[in-house]
Image 1 (spheres, rainbow, N blue to C red):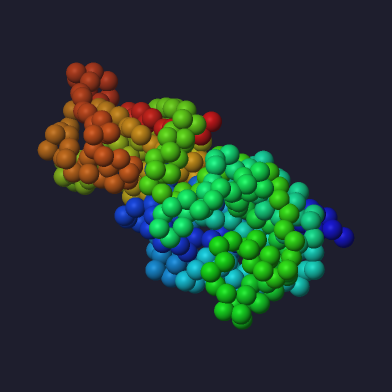
Image 2: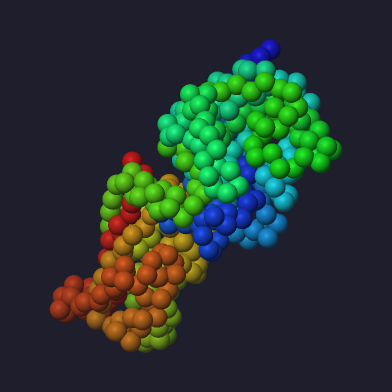
Length: 407
C-alpha cells in the first residue's frame, strides 16, 4: 500500500506551527494573531487548510503565553472546523522544537507513528493564502516514500555577502528554489528525524526538509504557489491586506423588526436599557434595533433570519439579551472570511426619544460590530402619527449592513 492509497481512506493529520513571535512584522501582537481584513491571520489559515475535507486532525502548536489569543481565534471557526482541531500544545524556543512538540502530541492522540504509510503535513500559520490547488498537489505528493516540499524557481539574481557587507560571489539561480509550506512527510520518518536531531543538540534547522536531509533522507519537490506568501515583514501585511480587499465583493443585507408595546417600565434599544412607561411584547428582550441589525447581517450572507437561528419556540431564548444574536451574525461573517464595513439603522417610534441615549447605543453597536462609530449610522424618525407607530402602539427599526465577502 502506498502513502497515497492510505490517506485516500483516512484523514491526513496536519501540524500548524503558530508559536513564533514574529518580531520582524513590527510592534504589537504576534503576526499570526494580527488582523488581516478584520480577521486574525490564524483564522484565515485554519479556514484555508480545513477547506480540504481530507485534512484532520489539526494539531496547532502555540506559544504558552498566547492561549487566550488562540482561543479567541478558535471561537471564530464554525463548529465543524473546531471538531477537527486537537487541543493546542506549547511550542519550543525554535521552529524545529515546536514542530517536534506537535508531532509528539499527534503521536499520542492520533497514533500516526504506528501507521507505517501515514503521511503528515506541516504548515506555517503565517501562510494564510494556501490554495486548494496547492493542498491538492501536497496530497498527491504523499505517494512519495518520505518527503516532498513545495518550491518556486528563484527569479532574482542572488549574491553572497561577506561579514563586511561586500559581495562575495553570485549564486547559480537555476539550481536554487524558494521553499514554502505545506510540506508533506512520512510521519514515522519525520518524527524519528526530529528525535535524532534533538538528541544531537541540533535545534536551529529552519524547516522540516532540513531535518530530513540531516537524517539522510531524500527530499522531493513539487510546484509551489507564488500567492502562498509568508507574512514576515510589515510590508507583507500591507500587500496581503490589499490582496484580500481586491478579492472581495461588497454585499448588502436589509433587516426589519417590530414589537408592540405592553405593560412594563423599560425598553431595550441598541443594547441600552431605557426607562419607559411601557415595555414591549417579545420572547427575548425585544430590542428592535439589535434584531433588525441581526437580520441585516444574516441577509448579507443569505443565511436565513433571526427566527430561523433563534426560534421563539425555543425556551432557551426567553428573555435573552439580543447582543448574543448580533455577535452570532458577526461571527458568521468572519467564518466566511468576510468583513463588516458599515451599518445604517433607523428607529421608527413616537416615544421613547433616541437622542439622550444615542452615544451609549453607538458605543454598544461599535463593540458588537467591531466598527468605529464613524461607520455606524444611527437615526430616529416618527411616522407622523400614522400607522401603529404613529398611534403609539409599538416601535420598529430598519437596518442595512454592508459586508465584504470573498468571491
